[in-house]
Image (cartoon, rainbow, N blue to C red; front, top):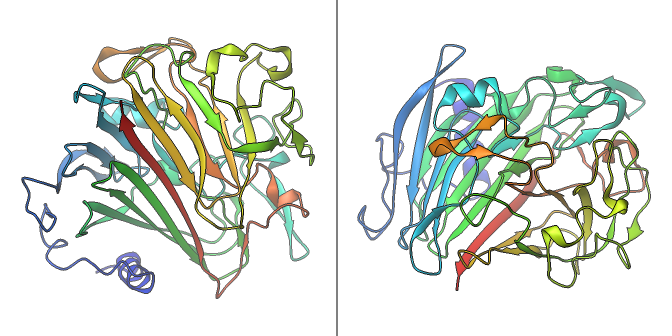
Length: 387
């Protein structure tokens, strides 16, 4: 067992995830009611940098299916029942690993060390200024040139009473992409029998650093085509305005009277082209909402999205303070994805629970600093239903 795997087992045990008996030695791990009800299996999916990549298939008792890669912790497919009981793949992505490696806008990825942007690729911590890799103009985005979405993770299937789960682990070494400290990360994906895709992240460091881990699936609850007819509710009274480089200004602005007010359920397309949504590339949603939490760190309903075509509804819950809602503005018809689908502009949306963009440079905002002896933990839940 290598050093990373030793850490993965130790950290999993310390956060109550030591449910590995009978799973790690096999290519499949079934729930308490047997494989016919819920299961997890794996198959080879190619290689990256000489490392083998596995694709794990999780099935729950209700028939929902999640396919997760060890490359980038990517959710390659998520199939849930529609109003007629037919399974619909509600995520965008590719059929082949090579396409994820060569040309992916973070489809389904685990992003870090810092999801979203850090202005000018710099931050100061304990009197030291750190310069990060810049991969979004002059800014740092989603962990840099080779973030967590481009790493091959070690995998361990877990045995759970409420559906199958997959644990992924990795170490980000001191200085990687410019970040300080060796950061050990464990991500657990659970496909519960309540039709929830639950993603839990845990991390520890040996040197003060910044951490903001999130999930980056592109969703389309109709299974394809436009998302402009999807109905959206967002539990937020404020957003964090951005400058021309999409870096937060430090303000928190009320959503009242703006196209960012989703406290009353509204279709994505109703106000998406409002002049107030204009970014450097034109109108569209790619903004951060400040969630109305009763208590910091409490699991809270952040958003709800519904497709009028399939009747599929997705609730987004998390203990994170903010939510980035992105409406697929950069999709432009040049990507051919799963099943030959051509992804046009606004054919997918992202709901990314996280801390606010550029928080390392905003000292008045909730801290993203992780110190030795502390443990980072967050939870993201995508819960599906249909009617």
